[in-house]
Amino acid sequence: MDSIQHFPPIWKPHLIYPDYLDNGKEKEYTKAMKVSNKLTLARVVLAPLFFVLYFIPLWFDMESGAAKSVLICLLVPLLGFAEFTDFLDGFFARRNGEVSDFGKMFDPFADVFLHLSTFTCFVFSGYMPALLYVLILYREFSQNFLRMVAAKKGTAIAARKGGKLKTVSYVVACFVSLVQECLVRTGAAAAWGLDMELFRNIGIAVYVLCTTLAYISFIDYLRHFGSILKESV
Image (cartoon, rainbow, N blue to C red):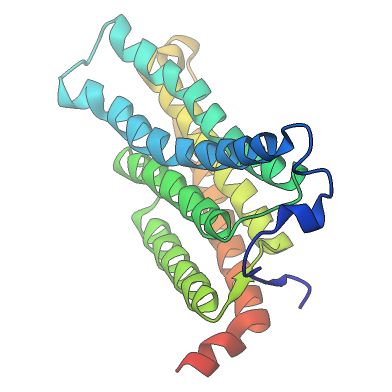
C-alpha cells in the first residue's frame, strides 16, 4: 500500500527545511504553494469557460462567419493550457517537498470538473456516446466518494498508475473530439473532402478505451483501499 499517505497534522517547515526561516525563504515556500493551488483552480475556472465558448455559436445562431471558426480554434490552446496546469500544480507542490491535504482533494476534483465539462460538450455534438458518458460519470463520482471517505479516516489516496493512464486517455479523447469539431466548424472537412464518419468512429473507439481504463483503475483503487469503505460502513 505504497500509495497510502497519512495526512501530516501540522506542517512544520523549520523541521524539514532547516534554512526555511533564513534569508526570507518562508515567503518563498508560501508563495510556491499558493501558485500550485492557483494552477489547480485554473482548471475549475477554464472548464465553464470552455463550455460557454463551445456553445456560443449555437446559442447565438452563428452558422457561418469568422466568429464561429475563431471561437472553436481558441478552444484548442485553452484546453491545452488547462491540461498543462495538471502537470504544473504537481510540479510546484513536489518541488517544495510538500503536498497539502487541500491539494490532494482539490487536484482530482479539478480534473474531473474539467473533463466532465468537455465530455458534456462532445456528447451534445454526437462525438461521445451518452452511455459511455454516464458510465464515466458514475465512475468519477464513486472515486471521489472513496477519496472523501478515506480523507475522513485521515488517509490520502495518491494517484496510482492506472488512474494516471486513465487521465491521459481522457486528454487524448478530448483533443480527438475537439479536432473533429474544428474541422467541421472551420469548413476544412468539407473543403478537403474528409470522411468525418471515419473520424467519429475513431473517436468512439477512444471513448470506449477511456471507459475501460476508468473502470480498470477504479477496481484497482477498490482492491487497495476497499478496506477503508468496509471500516466506515
